[in-house]
Length: 409
Image 1 (tube, one colour):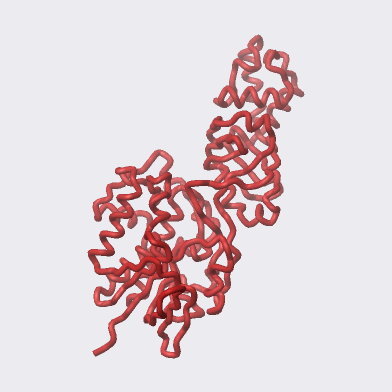
Image 2 (cartoon, helix red, strand yellow):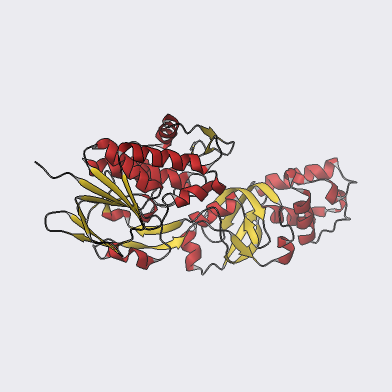
């Protein structure tokens, strides 16, 4: 009688549960065990999306996966042929979690509660007979002569299994991945990849609470730019445009020591001649009106007043007193408003890092390690990460599913 296949999944998060479930579905005879370091599984899933769990995205606004995945886009494109965002939708709905797409293309449970997502995963795992062990911290993995893998735990006795998946999530510290480097894996230095920007300018921060839609923000001197709403905060700038930019430029801004200039285009229009033409149209239509009384491009009142003060044009000036010099000043301020970022803030709803196990060490068809046979990877422990909007969880579902199926065969 052949020995029963034992599969270990190290990490009880989104990718881990999906890997374990996929493995057990593929091979019901296998013994599948999730080993979670903490006392609770799926803890991060519970707090994503402000506790509502933005579990995927419609991808309707994504024309190139690089827009969603600054790192790992080619891998995700390949894996989407096996398990895509559409499959995620179907998977959860078939298990009683009705989903809804918001106007911004983010997908949430109709319940607006992450608990329903956690319940679906834990229920499915339990139904299939996946075992879950909490308080099991894996400190090392040893490759045995016969191809088996030995897991060494911090407290418990070592365990030998035939296959294992590492799904421990993003690690802010390189040393937490040292045990994987010891096996021969290349580790790309982990860095924060979703954060807000600190801006010291007091007059700018006085706009706290102001949201401007359709802003384009760029890192001066690079090709990195992002478009979306920008929120002025008491420490600087946040909102989707900023968070996207922090993801795209994560490595660059780290190398700058988080001190770098940004350019803000408040109206999203890049053609200066068209912007000048629009402003001239206001001059022609409203010559006697004060500059403050007509807001071009639908800018919020406070933001328009701030720009007028910044350009020193004066709130009491009329549109017909603007002149060519004043008009050019406005064009520049609306389309290329520069600020010095003095550090990074936190983004409380996400704990995302870029970096991790290099994708060059992974078989991208199976998620198996090229340097350690029978060891698989899924989720953010890999050098794959995404902008905010449900894309990171989608990467967890997709890589988890592929790894789970492959290691159960």
